[in-house]
Image 1 (cartoon, rainbow, N blue to C red):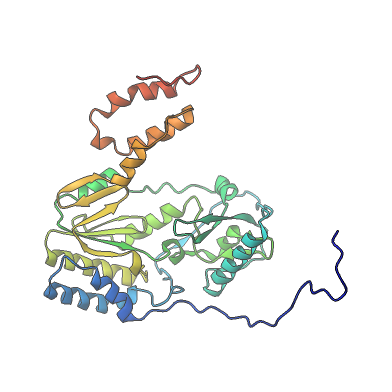
Image 2 (cartoon, rainbow, N blue to C red; image 1 turned 45 degrees about the horizontal axis):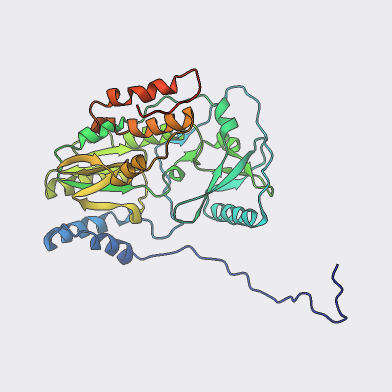
Length: 354
């Protein structure tokens, strides 16, 4: 123990003012200008036509971070049959992470993403660091997913999507702003999404990440929104929309058609993640251009730099990555046959030159 002298100062207290952070706002000119500045491939006349189109559909682009669309075409449902409610206790978080979680909860509450819950359900939260250093707020819904009746609606085959891009000269990629959050949850199912940070019980009003049927709900929605537009106009994979065209005029017309559909469904786009009138773009680990499809150099580097597998699990992970690019390797099955045999070995894992 440390003995303090009489009158020694061990702490001070000062009044502070609680400043409420306002959502970041940006004007129409700012977010449209940032898009127009990226149109390096276009001449001045073409840029004017794009500017006119963007202004016509400016309501698709949120004017502040808190502005998330509310789709009017579907609601997410959670069918758990007759299984009783599941209540899990919150996981302990370090003080700094706890404060971060409470701040994120407050933001979601203010933005209408969540609401207070008084039901019998509860799942623990998980905080995940994103590449940009920010935190993604997630809920561990594994127990809920185990008892949820699965929706078998399929996602598009990636190889079919890539094949459909052949012959296009212009590409635009659109990204929905917090796509899942634009889909409401049916009122009677909201309590099943309840979570707790250790302080309060909350439930989602919109579809959160982590629900097993969320991808199926979202893919069905997007295909419904864009139904009738052929693959020569646009393709969709969850919240990523690819618009194509063989000429500038055709591409502009296809873009207008997609904008009209999104506007009718009351969906919003993330301007920072949209790329307009590109000659080349990266999509699902591939680089696509008018010349065709090739592998993403960054992903190939990951294959080349993969450490020597030490276990069957390591080897299966490596084969999974390689299989994603099998269309570019001939004969892939012959080359990988020794590796597949090694994953089936009953004896000890033995890595050889073969």
